[in-house]
Length: 309
Image 1: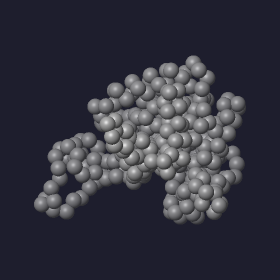
Image 2 (image 1 turned 120 degrees about the horizontal axis):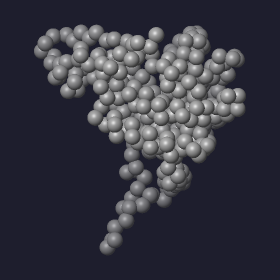
Image 3 (image 1 turned 45 degrees about the horizontal axis):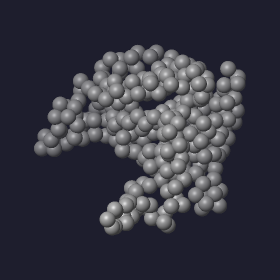
Image 4 (image 1 turned 135 degrees about the horizontal axis):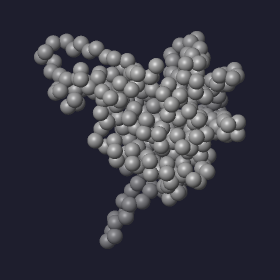
């Protein structure tokens, strides 16, 4: 049943940064195990699939990391310790508020002792973000762990699951990353750059093993696991979400359509009808984020999971 997953980890090798990041994850989790605090793993951003070992070309899953980075901030507000497993180039908690960088928000005061400061008109926007970030880091409740490729991601996901397993019901896995469905095995990959003068490129991609099954069944069987389902066709969305629940036996699927994902989602659990979460026009204009409502709901469900276990 799980042979494909086992074979994947045998045939592929982790990155050179893997051991360092695994140690960081282990140390972070060890520090919270005896505290009673809830802990969340949030995955975010898209995975890339290299076409060469010395990678120049790759197939990418697009995701800016908006949902994962925003959700992380709201998990932190709820008191969780959070491991943020993210694509290295995607949005990050707190920094996401300055998508074009901080340079437009600061100014230099010249003189004998030049200073850099936030422009007065931007203080109202910058100050609460900086305060929240500094408080979080002072408490040590956020660990950022980057990945780039599909293989990076799956090795780190497995490592994080192993570190979270001892937390049992206190652990929550919020799998918002856009994970590739196809990949090129290491032994089928070109060593060097594929050249266009060799003619049209034909690729044979293999299916990525469904890692959600061992994650739920073997790695973190007592954790509260949340996955996502994105579709472009509303008519199949809920049934696809329910099929995932039947197949993998986890707790919750957050289902969303591509065009409306920023203001409407459906919370699909096996025991009841799906529940819609949406933003009204006034909330959208006021800048309210749907992730705030989502995390309120997920936190409530996680609390019930802990109470019922």
